[in-house]
Image (cartoon, rainbow, N blue to C red; front, side):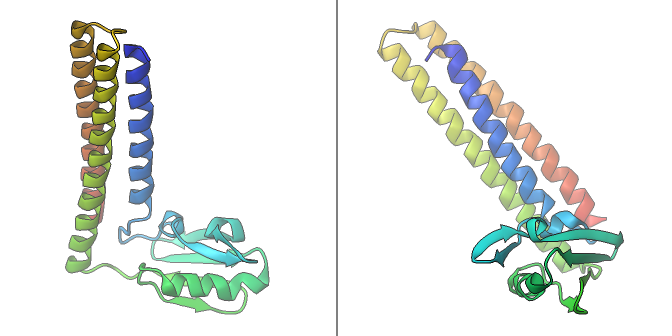
Length: 185
């Protein structure tokens, strides 16, 4: 691999780590109802664990409630079971056709716990990016040892890799700070 390929590969992998972090943020509670809160839920659908969106339509008629209407009536109980066993802290209200979830306002302690979860998730994303940088730097060292790259090119590549890491750490921090503000309002 040449210097450009190593950097491109690292950037693609860091973008994937950032996408994973974005998805983690979508499922974090903010005090307002949002269909994305249920994205992490998996429902037993005829023997396979499926995302809730594959088995039901999820809507938010107002800021404090979520309505889940299953495509097949027999999956109602499985959806209810998945919600009860999740860590969302929501009590499903099943009327035989749809499930209604009331999203209660969060207390200060709950908000602090969610902010702590967001920070933990942000740190995991940063660690992932740092591991990608380490792998990229190893590729630069290997290329230099194999005499396919000069020492100067290796050093320039490592500097670019460090700049790339700083860019992605900044993106993670920006997303985490925005989510923290959203949760604390």
